Picture (cartoon, rainbow, N blue to C red):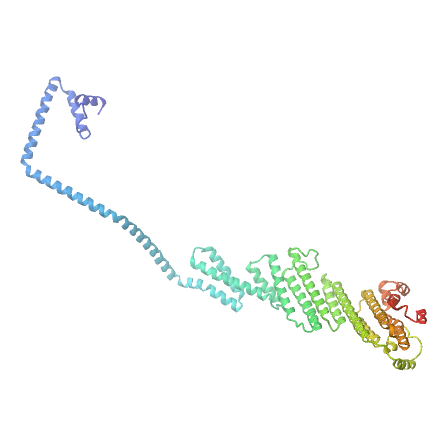
Length: 543
């Protein structure tokens, strides 16, 4: 409908047009029809409309009268229908309330049925592939069987297969369980390989075990070297600790043999396992680089051996020269690989020999002090008897090469026991007497004799007031025997232990220069200084 039609309608109807939205097209047609009427027709149109409206009302009334019963029934039916709709609405509302719960339960049911369906499909698939699943589930048991039976190649292949299977199907629970079980067996296999390295392995077996460790790819290059050295060191330490320690000589001999043989075996195995690495002495022992590991371990083994050597020597071995020869052979064999530790061995022997000699001399002096406390000058008859025995011997001074003890010492028990103690210490030293000890030995004997001289002087101070003429004469002879028999005799024994020609050749000097420098000679004046005023004038002038 156009704008002009709207204006006409507003002129006709001051308010809204009744039924405009419903009869919009009819009203538009009627307005068009009105627009075609003449004035006379327009004047009659109002009366016509009133007549038509009255006619319609009469017809409606007649229709209502004629159909009154129907209208009443229709009204009652409408009420009933309305009441039914109200009841239906209430019931629908009551029905809608549990429908939400029912919907949720139905949704859950659908989800559960879907899960059941998936499980059903899974079970069907599992039943179809039962043999394959069973084979996968039996892999851990099969690997354990291979490990127990020693089939390490097959066990490693199974572990590699399961590792790939786990990477490909990591979301499957069964595969995860199999992977975890195989990893446990894999770790037990790794521990078994490490335990085998702690046993007595020959080179082929060692190469085989280490090949398996490399295939497992559990360690890097330096870690493999550390593991090899640690496990073999554990085995070697257990072997050394099993040697009985009751006899020091036997323990030292077996320690040398076990250490020398097995360290060389470990060295051979190490070279075979790591052929691109040099084995020899290195100055950087604190480094963790691959090339330094073995050298550090080797130096540690040498240090351990030297500690054991010193402990056994201090405990006392029956033959120092035998032990020294074995150690020199041991060190010499290691010199072929640049690990000559003989100088360290010598220093230990020198230290132990010196300690043993000093301890023996100290013990000799202690015994002498004890003997001097109980010593009384012998009577003249005993001295005369020994003098008669000496008169039957060849007269004259004892030459420098005579090493038999002076007969005069038999007159005095403390001096005889003292001489025996010195001879025992020097005899033991002579079996293994390093030339470098000559100064220490000379100084030790010199201090010992000075202590003896001082002890004799203390005896004189203690007993001089009660000396009889015979006792004084015997005491003078006692002094003479110590000063002119025992001291020169010990000097000759000392030169027998350290021959002057050997010392001269070692030092690169002549015998005359050696004697002028007083090398290997005790200071007699220092020794006799406490008793020099008590010696007879004749003997003093002779000295």
